[in-house]
Image 1 (tube, one colour):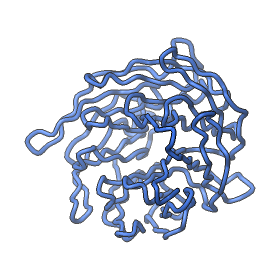
Image 2 (cartoon, rainbow, N blue to C red):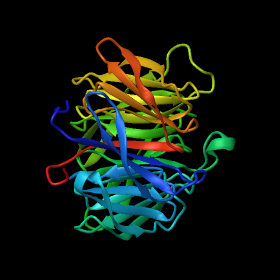
Image 3 (tube, rainbow, N blue to C red):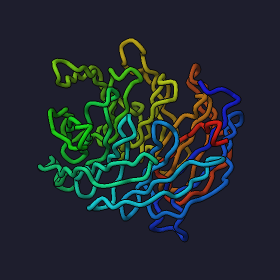
Length: 358
């Protein structure tokens, strides 16, 4: 749970193709008591569809049209540009790091490609270390005819990269060579047909893997173990992201885990709802707390604040962010502020400023 003395900001990334400007990242001061955002800065970057922050909290990385960009997080959470790197492919959709902040991974939805980039000591991006193209054909020609790598995430022991392929309905498992950055496929986690695995989150102890499935509007829970040099996965639960009553064209989108690793948050486009799940800390299984409307169209991302007392929804088609007070014990969510206009918002990260950054 967040300390009331902690200073938080929020980074919001968005698409800029249809906007009147090229400000793809907005920086907000966050009032943890009221849940209010105050915009303080915006960064000119094209189509910043996804962002991530290094595990030491120093560097922010963003997708952009020509590849990826690196920024140092400076005073007040401002972003100081470091460099741009090409990824030798189409624009990525997801970005993440290994736990030593040495390797940067980019998922390619449009070309079915994984790109591994070496990072320098100052956090800037160096060179392409490996490129992997997924091959195969999905089960639905209209949508899944080609591979679509939607998410790349390292297991918490930093051994294996999990690559969720929304087009092929499975998750490729790659062993990372920490010296060269090369990937070697060692396993496949098969999802249900037409499920479309989208995003991955991992428990704090690394033993449980959570995968949200876009088309089936479910979350799969897997156990992960490392036995005799190989990964082992077992699915132990599948739970719906929706209520029994819901819009027929709903699709699950976001998946976020809270700072205290006690809750998961998902969102449902079409149904335009946010779902919160409590995580059983011993079994890893999920229990739905609520699934409630977000007062916006097509929530692409949705997250609880670090104090678990507020929730924000990024509504891609209505070009808004909406804000709510939540009571997780009672399963209540109530709007607490007017909507905030942002063109095509797509991803949000809360960041606690270090003493040097304050």
